[in-house]
Image (cartoon, rainbow, N blue to C red; front, side, top):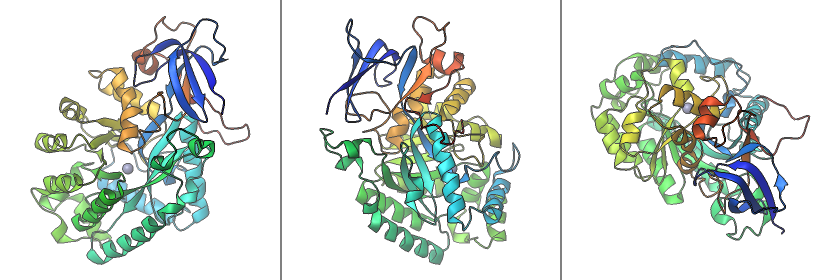
Length: 434
Ligand SMILES: [Zn+2]
């Protein structure tokens, strides 16, 4: 298999400093070298662009991608929004209609790719049809959603998940199965579909069910994601057993009194989750400093996933990103879904975060949508940086005529209006959502 060299005005490998007039050498869909160009060296010239690795969206729910705008209104109470989501799923053709869900996920996959995203951490729900995620380029870690507060419901959901996990061989090969020398082009260039598990959230899944998910993740070495401490309503439910989420659970007949009202509820949950090999704590908007200390003791395998524009939609108090970063806890970003976000651009999430938290450097926010996000969902072997061994799936940002001589992360993220696009565009005629 011949090597192909690409030249770019600037390369931002993310895992290494930017390279001016850089070369990426590829073979069979993988990067074999990233370096400065030699004088007169033949290469495919990509022009006046900055080349970055494909972006990684650490948390989304693509089944809501057919929504033109978020559900509810900005500033809506969390329990009220959950009620809106439940009502939408009931009246929407997505509920119970495989075709509508398929179209919504296809739209979300295309939209993600158009925004320069190469891999997503997707919360995948029943009915379980992993082929709905087939897209020519986008890789997905499918975090199967686990629900169940009441023991009977939890047991039925677990039985169903066990069947899916048993037939996991039907998913595409995981990175562990790709030959290290990249000798199989058909495998190295195919998008990755890998199974993970997601106990949904403390208000929908009990500790017993979460424990099953943790044990499965540990035995199969698969990633786990869970919505944690997303709202003040959830915090009240966990520690006091009261509030709007209790009222909602009572209304829908899902209230299980013994599941809530524990003062040490968060510590018990975080300790339980630490048994999984890789944990994405999604949101973590309302953890206390003590609880961040506990997360920090597991920072080698915990990542906090912040969803900046969804956070703003709910009008939550400022996200405690400082609490995480001061303790060295990895921080990734996600879009969450179109039920609470205007689009699926992870770059715009990083822009929003950089604007909201200017004390953190722009390159740190780019890490949050590349290397750290890839690690959070267990795909760092393929994604997150332009480096030897990684997939050749870059995105490009056009450099304007008045770009500085040495454009940096701050320029790309906060000063330039240009946005990333995939180097490999879909054929004309495919839907464009960006
Ligand atoms: Zn979510």
